[in-house]
Length: 440
Image 1 (cartoon, helix red, strand yellow):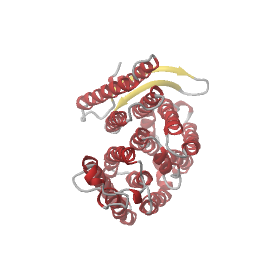
Image 2 (tube, rainbow, N blue to C red):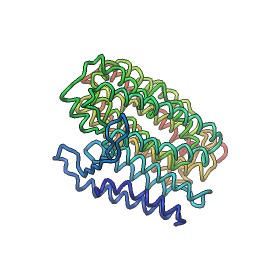
Image 3 (spheres, helix red, strand yellow):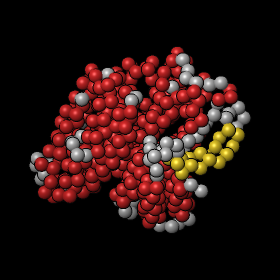
């Protein structure tokens, strides 16, 4: 068994242990800590000089009528390895910050482990079937966590997210099937490495790539909250329990970006060229329009939700550039954003737990009462803004360099997002920690 498969079996065994009445929190903490150690071992054993996938396990699974053979095929490379580390780190942090004594504790921690298992499975899968199924598996506990343990209006928000992401997933499925139909019968396979090799050797005409790429872009884009398919995200994160918001915004949301990076653009580069102008317009909607919407938010968790949506525009900008510098920035920023937004949601949850408030007008002066939270929030805010010396800055800088080579004027507009993010993030720091509210 590959060590990559261990990352999937550990949360599964913990899930079974919880069903068998093992204390849920201890089982979840032990499993998440063990997975972090395994992911660190894989990271240090990974050889960056080897261009192919490493820690590969390929087992024939099933043959469905009319479909290519399905394999349990997993492995890591320089693209998904950082995302595996991100997942294990955020999973452990989410379980640590989960409140003790929560109602229906066994279900709660089981659902958190299920999200982590699905996210890791989606990132390591080298078979399109499992790539899709693992993500869908991770969405189910997300809906349940919001619907059962969310705050006010949780049932409506859970239904809204379910509908949005189900539609996005269905569009994505249509795109995957359209991609396979586009290929000749002998080349149809779910195996991603084989599909990549075929695409390099037999590039398709741009006119044929445009339709399946459009479905993949809309499908993956909805899962990532690409403008204008974003409205599910801010309200969902505001209502979700803190661990669920951390896992979805920090980890699971990266699946759509990873899918574009791993599958859609490498297999259909002509489709990207065909729709690139539209993609630039949409990503500017994320950066500029959503950025201005974020500025006027009056609640901390909602502001963080819109901030997460806004920053997806930078990553789409790097994807649209499709050069080595831009793609390197995409991978760095996916991990950096995942860590910073998970930390911000964790701190926002702590603030809400201790004060009972999330409105800026009701908060203020918490820097003296909560010094550690204050320092951590400022550090995470600086990372989110892209202050030099922090990983977000490196990712954004690489993306801007890469996109400048492709579209200078789009990059010039997108850079204004740095100013916008500084305004809303520093305003949050001031409102929550520095300025005394009338209640304090």
